Image (cartoon, rainbow over all chains, first blue to last red; front, side, top):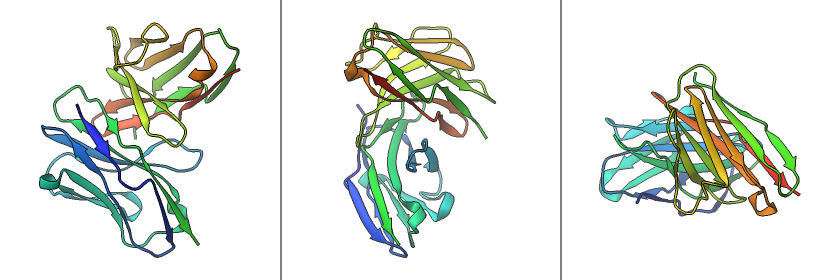
Length: 114
Length: 113
């Protein structure tokens, strides 16, 4: 069965600091990978996704993620965070060509202090 | 872009009653929709996969008789929490898959008193 592991439960940064959130997955086949963000009181929004091709994926709001197949990882990065990036971030995986089930990690809460 | 509308956003019900939550894809057809439950400070747990015109597929540990799912059309799936109890209080989220990936509803906060 698929599983997704997000190692950081809560990350606290100051504005302008660089961000990297870890995500590792467990699945034997080819996968699609996603990062979602949930701002306080709002619904999930897609930040970026990887289906195939260039393993470095750029998303909205300056976020990017790199798929490293050998490490089963899809870490999220942003060079300089802003206070408005304070939110919960979820990594998710679905198998390609399968049942389309999307499995989420437990999420990482990011707090950016002004 | 693709939009999924979920209703109601918040509901309070008495223990023992049933509550229906609707999930609509507004500008696309969704043959498959998904229902999640989000616990405080925890991730989204997939409850079931809703398939248009056929029975839902439930994840292990999810009571199908308690969480009834109906996907009668390509744009509407409903989740009915039957004989709700306080432990069913949670945040329920639906999503639909499309070419761009997955679009999520805004969620329903269910409180059972």
